[in-house]
Image (cartoon, rainbow, N blue to C red; front, side):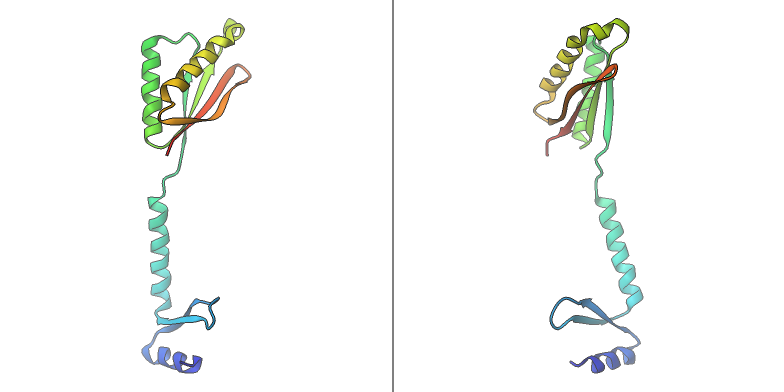
Length: 141
């Protein structure tokens, strides 16, 4: 169909001639209401954005001499965050003379890694940043 015929046909129906795929040879056009088409494409884009899951970074703070019960509570929180699909930043904070025993903090971070290795992978190895040691783990898809 020639372009002039299509334009007249669209005008007779009170609609618009919209170029859908300009890169094809010949370009693909449709006769439709442009306002309605834009509205529907915006709704589709909004729906796609709504279904998209963003990955947050949750933080769990510990101390090197943490009690076993407190440790278990923190580990439950870490597992919950990983199950929800979020990354977890495990922070080991050193205060005062604890800086002299950084190996205790590293051992504790290695213990955390060992307990959650089935559901996560280490994204950032434990490293010292000032008075705290940080490790980032993300869920395994």
